Length: 330
Image (cartoon, rainbow, N blue to C red; front, side, top):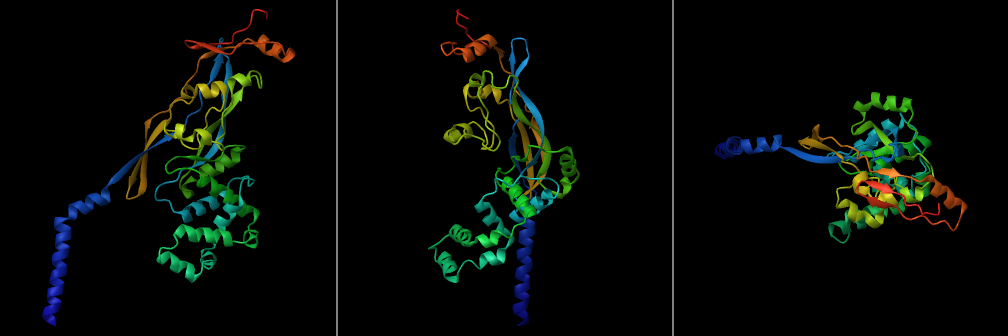
């Protein structure tokens, strides 16, 4: 008996020696291994000027609150961060959907959610007749209206924030709030950043047109951060290093010269160590492109409004200038 114990302990010691001496360096390198992941951050959109260098299309800066999801971020941690942030800002809850409420109820009531699945259904997962995602679908179907009616106004704000957290991609900042962010909210969030991993404060932008609706049919429109990339062109833009919530030109000049107006994104190198973010290194500073000079003949626009027979030619590009061609009758 003693000899058997001696053999076992000797085997264990030899095994530990092999692990530490032979493979020790390999394991140490694996522990210290870092991963570099580059994320692109959008910059303000390019501006348009008239021939006198007066801005025709500009960007209005706005305070914004963003969230960046890291690869090792757990859902429970995201919920905690959303709860802290909800105490610091006012968040509109109009966009919260029924599935958002059900999903959050499942996260906050794990035991009750587990009880919504029967043993027979769990057995089917073991037998590979169902998948885990099928069980989640069943849970969502079985959460009742009574369950979600329990949410208070404050909890709905948490859901709205959590919804924004989930809308982005790993290591890419997503907008949590960029409209009506007060200076007090901006300051409060700044003071509590250490308590909210992934949350940051920054300056966003809103497209402004100096002459309101004048020539908007030529200048075009830009999608909002909520709209992001149009679904009909999603493959086109994703192949060109856009993210789904990037704002792009939707029509006319804003769309036609998207490659120029989008500018050059800021590239940030995220260094991950042991699955956690250790540091962020800006590798390329982004810049907004200033576009061509836009020569506008306002008399054409005003006469178009007065006469249905007026006929202005379409904009025509010549080198770096855009000209509005006006018929000689004007």
